[in-house]
Length: 300
Image (tube, rainbow, N blue to C red):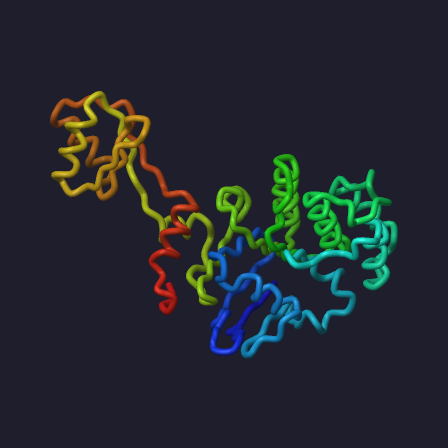
């Protein structure tokens, strides 16, 4: 597990991470979300021992990262700021990491094959595209076959095929019982892969919940109605207290009344319904709504 307890980091008078506490459990993909400047990258750097906290602690399987011998065999990490030496070949970069972490060099070929870089193993890193560099970073994270993966914006630079491959990889690693923590600003992608969410803003915890629970608690549910008489039905729903929006496809989206009550109202007045369905808000809408409501001081 990854345990973060009262983690705090200040730069002068600016508190970047403010008493942050959460646990990342094995067997699930945990999405680490927050707007730009929320403190996500600083938190990851403190967990990895790259930034010293002013207070609190971070533990990986009960130990600080700096206490781990051969850390690549325990934690696979990809940070946005990490980059190999441009003059090294992809294979040499990974061999150096393998040797420093007592990992057999045979593993280098395996991870290069896994990330789709086997054909360019002898090319210098400085000639790589952004997507190829990202794949090399993922290869480094996988090198030690670690039980914990921590990835910061891992889909940056990947094409559609690469994004799907990464999604399947993260799912497979979690299903093997590993701990997977992924920071990303791509809500659609996160909604497809994450089981659990940790959401922060201004360095404070806003939510720590399963994906479905997060959307149910913080999102807005609406009822979609299709009818030959949208104008009349919309006015009637508003009279009963609903908030009604006319969607671009001509359907009504009603908030504040359950589907059953809308159905009864339509039946009483003899209004035909072509669709009556309840929908939860998207992860993106729920996230933006929660962040928008956050004052920066209160914890939700």
